[in-house]
Image 1 (cartoon, one colour):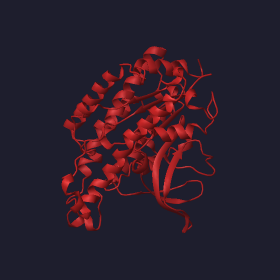
Image 2: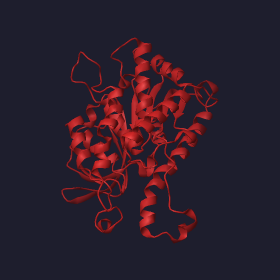
Image 3: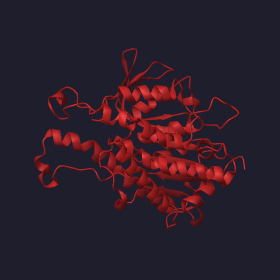
Image 4: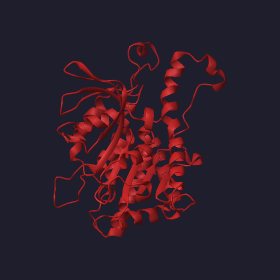
Length: 363
């Protein structure tokens, strides 16, 4: 029986360059091994799951191509990588508000205007809807409240946007979902979006507040999902590739003085602490989960992330300066090289890519 192939991509702002470098290599390798110049990431994963910047990449990989005689996906993985180089500076650096944590923060604590991001998302995704994406998709967000016709329809809760809901009951513009999953607290203002099926209005923030590494969400969702080759697959029936964005080196005020931090210091630190805290925890849980399987299935899970000694880029996940983007690309390339090495816990990346091909339902 063919295994269900799942890709999970972490959140991390402009550090999305790192998984974009790795996934660009994967797509080029798929083209080489399959001898199909039109091969795309969407053709070799049955589900893609993303948080924040990982959600942006997910939607690039799964945007359908209007030319039916060409590749299945509109964008190549290389074009997704180029997105960060082309637009990152405008989204972050040029959109930065003045007087962060000055007098302005008393009425608006967001560091960046969302107008440029929203304009670019409209240009790239237009009116594409979630149900039109090429494969099963899960993108995380957190809803702070919602209403239908002015009446509360839900309380505060985690939200999982997916492409396989019944579109007559629940559907969203892709651009709105991406805006929601990337609305990191204190970075961008919450996203106000609408369910196209029933008019429900939602106010959402970044899914990284609870699932910056969404691989456990991917596993859980797959367990209750019907795929072409399997229905509700167990871990032994999955191939799960999880790619990180090399977080963890953000700066904090002097920890020794933490008992006397004021509200501004806590406000600036809490989002990054929350988003970073789950990354290694989830990876540990996933390794333990797959370790319980029979030996032949224990290597079905592979995690790729930047080693701590290779994190030589800015700690600011909004630093999209040309110099920092080059450092992020370099970190991605170093991480890619190390991913070829097999370990006790994982196959080398090229071997994992071959499994993606071997488990293609059309083979």
